[in-house]
Structures are given as C-alpha cells and as structure tokens.
Length: 427
Image 1 (cartoon, rainbow, N blue to C red):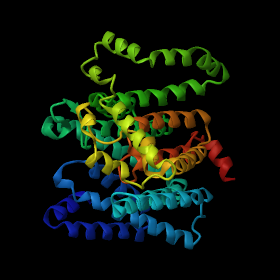
Image 2 (image 1 turned 45 degrees about the horizontal axis):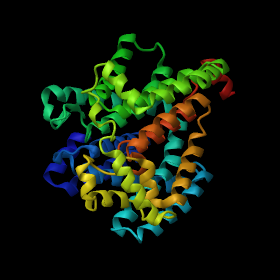
Image 3 (image 1 turned 120 degrees about the horizontal axis):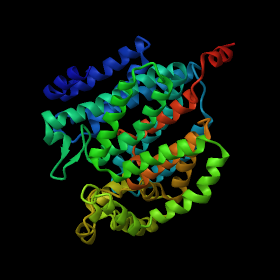
C-alpha cells in the first residue's frame, strides 16, 4: 500500500488521499478491520517524520481516524457492540475544550484538534476495544512486527542514509521519527507491547529471534540518548517485576527502595552518578540542571496558566504560545520546542477542570487492566514519559494511540491463558 501512496503523494497529493480512502473502505468490505488499524498506525509513524517527501501522510492520519470513527458509529447503530459509559465523561471534556477554543489564538485549529482527540478516544473505547477482544492476538502480532520494522529500518538508515537517521549535529539517533525524543517515546510505549507479545509467544520462537526483537528496540532507544525513555522503560520493568512477587517484595519496596529512589533523584546525586559511569557527554549532563530549558519553560507555562486557570484557552493554545509568543529570556535559556509537559499542556488548554477530567478518564480506562502490577507499570512509565513531553495532549502523533492499544491489549490478553483455561472459558 505505502509505495503506491508514496508515488501518488509525490505526483499529486489529493490523489493519495483518494487512493487511501478507497483502500480503507475496501478493507472494511473484506472484513479486514485490523488492516485499517494497522494503516492508521503506519501513517502515524510517517506523519511524525520531518521529511518533506512524506509530508502528504499527515492528512492521511485525519482520513483514517475519520473513517474509523464513521465505522464505529455504524457498528454502534447496528448493535455490533455496546456504547461505553466511560465515554460519557469525554463529552463534558469536549465542551470545556470548545469553550476554551473561543479564547484561543486560532479557533479553527483549536476546534479541529479537540475534535480529533475526542474521535481518537471514541474509536479507542469502542472500535479498537471490540477488535482486540475479537482478534487481539493477531492484531498484537501485527503491531509488534510493525514496530520491529520501524526500529530496524531506522537502524538501517544509519548506514544507507545517516543524515535522516541522525538528528543534525547532535549525533543522536532518531530513526524514521521526527527527533530523538520521538523514537524514545515510541520505544517506551512499544516496549510494553513487545513485553506482552513475547510473554504470549513464550518458546514458540527460537531464542535468537527473541534477542533480535529486543535488540532493535533497545539499541534504538539507547542510541537516541533519551534520558526520559531510559527511565520510563526502567520504571515499567521495575514495577512489573517488583509487584509480581507478592507482599514481601512490596514491603521491601516501601521500606528500602522508595527512600533510595528519593535520594537518587536528588539532581546533584544523579549528576555524580552519571559522571562515575562515564556517560556525561552522551546523556548531556550539562543540561540536567535546566532540563534542556524545560524548567524555564515550565515556569513560564505555569505563569501563563494562572491567567485562565479553570477552563484554559483550548487545544493547541500551548503550541501557538510557544511557537509565536515565546519571550526572549526563554530563548536565551536554551529552551527548544514547546512546553515539554503533557500535564502543563492540558492545564493551559483545558484548565484545572478539563485536566482533572481527562486524567480521571485515563485512570478509569487503565483500571480495566486486570493485573495490579501491570496497571502500576503502565501508569508510572507512561506517566513519567508524559511529564517530560507533551505527547499525551495530542491525538495524531505516533504515541497516544499506541498507549491506548497497550492498555487494551493488557486488558484483554493478560495474563496469558493456558489451553485448559481457554477451554474452560469457552465452556
């Protein structure tokens, strides 16, 4: 599909839109809804790229989301699956976002981004949930191999097209994504899916392939030198293994490891530890005290948030604010990009009321995961990642949809069931 779309997009962009829509409709006619989902994930990855050659894929993200939303409405009217009551909480959140949009720098941009966010939640809670319940293992396998391809192609580009795979003069790996932090976030979220798939796979594959799968992910994340990603992945594995062993491990956790973690998270201790490990240059130790300008950005964002505390100023407000109105002192501080914090982004865009509402929705959604240690692992890993990047505030990046998928996969497929358990469940 993608080579055809690439040729069409280079020749005449609207033609690629038409071909893509026809392909998705054809998938539906052939009962291949999981191909529609994969197509969405593919164009999300391409849409994150900053290469002009694939710029046309950004609009394909909108087309696929709208088609999936339309299919969800059709399925609901046919009672193929039921309406999720959790989505009722999304409606007041959307109202708050629209109220804020009237005070935004661009009402049209704010309205469209709020609507796409609501559509993603609508599709995730219904369409994606249904198809994972119906054919979850097949979809999990395909999402897994798609991620393997994304990481492997990115690593291959280091040899055949290094100027694409390496971000500017920083020497940091970005693969096929827009920047190194992007491949780091993608690695964090797909690591959860890798972990689940390989748990289900067990010994069906040769061990050498298991190591190959993990290698392309971990090498990509390590070469990105994303401190956020490395810590987020560590948090997931830590909470999974520590809470899996029962009450004794949890007691040790609270008595011993929490105070240790608090001590380590002292900034001076972190800097000293990194220097001892000889990773000062790779992990950009000189920027830790300012968070690469993030701390100054958060200060300005917090001051701006207090001007519209309760309802915010609509989706995309923080993007426009940091792109067009960033003060000179913040530029001098070394800050690059936007607010770099999903929670501050929500506060700026939807205020206190909207932020509390959307976080409550995600917590309720995550609470459907049946195993406590996995819930905590996802919560702390994704939550930590979102604290240093604004990805959770956006619907059409390559990350939020994968978080929704990860939660749904663990909800319906974990813990793995033995053949005897499956037989008993069927009976």
